[in-house]
Image (cartoon, rainbow, N blue to C red; front, top):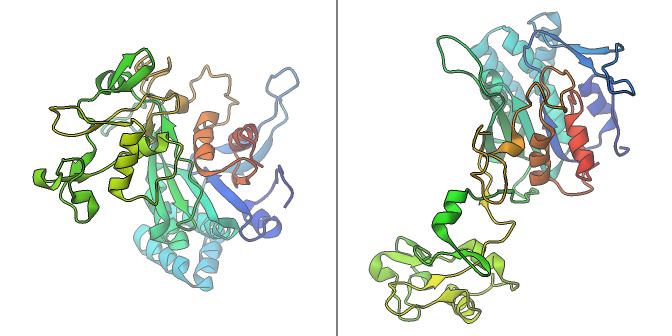
Length: 377
């Protein structure tokens, strides 16, 4: 498979003809779902204006017709868990447009599983109206144990609808092919309020406030984590020794083979743990680093007018994955265009430089632009 290649055609046939088994590191797909409009391949003139030359890519209107019946029958005849799942979905959804859509998606998901490396990940971006059906298909293809996250992404500021809560989010389903997958531990900056409460500014920067910085967790444990250390007995107070991961990450030593008490001894020796007379517990001390923050959660929701509340930046909460506004220069006029930063967050989290990223539906090329900028192929 050549690198940095764009294929034009039915993605099912392209996958079968051009992609070898286990050749892709990361897959992102944003399949169309009943928008009832034509999707075009967009062109720009050299001056940046939209070209009159447009090629119709597909018509996003799924119907239970002879073609859908044939696609469904092929899946069932192939047998296996996917066939059984489709039969169950037919009982649930009936011979409907939804079943037609799922009959289109099922063989493509099977092909995507085939081309994904054992260490690879798949992110499926979808409408909440179809996400539960698609999750069922993904469970059949990948196995329920390989489901990792259901990400909620706020796609707009408001959407006026009567007689229900306004629908302003999309769903992104995250699966991996195995338990050994690429994961780069994405982080977001702390909120300024968090830093104000838990850190104290001094001449060296922001250091942890001693208050609350204990090295124990709730509950009694057997083994060394429950035994006294330096005259402090965690079991007597219904607790156990628990060293924060960030504290171990800060030192340039591998303590993974140390016992719990040995880790505490070494951290005390290096000055990361303080024993203050009169304090109920030893406390730890560390300074805030530029890369510090909290692990990215599964709710990606930009909050307007929160600028300045995120520590170290003028951005608001989740502003890096803000939806595209009508004035954004990124906009190409594609009906379901996603912001490049959204794809950057996914690509950074689940792939590394030089690895292969695949978008089987492609749309207006957002994934391509983000992947190329981040050094993926």
